[in-house]
Length: 205
Image (cartoon, rainbow, N blue to C red; front, side, top):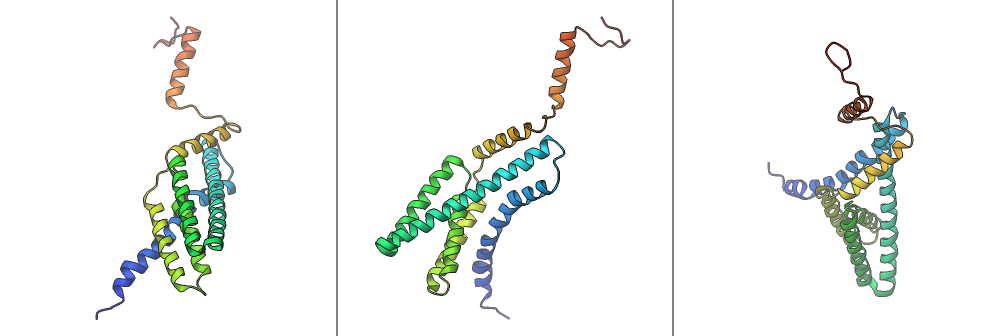
């Protein structure tokens, strides 16, 4: 039996739902969950402290970025539509999104798309009872943007800075363990300073 709704379900609805949900699941797994696990268990050493600090810094970044984007989009949209109508709101949206793309290029955190998509989800849900077309357009564009965030990660330079900050905080409370190579170098240097050498018979030269 042919199902006439199957193409719409498999090619439109299902990819859209996945694109809406998966980016937030990934963010939760990479920031909220590690932070919760690290807070509920005591750090046993330097590396666990680094992991906890990294998760904490990443979570703070997410909160700040989401807050800033929502504030800018909401104020820009309200001011644009108030003075210039729908066209003014569209121009304000475009300018804020372009500024977000520039920030992403500088920080390489790739948060512009998912923050913009989240705001569009918010506007779409608010327009559910008054403007169904606007709601549908907002959700479709938001799904595309969050999917872009999921498929094109650019985090590299900022992650290095975040890692350095997490390691600096960890060193305030724990000593960084020496690597095996560093231990060998330090042992050789100590022997050279002491003037002692190990021989098979256990005697010094």
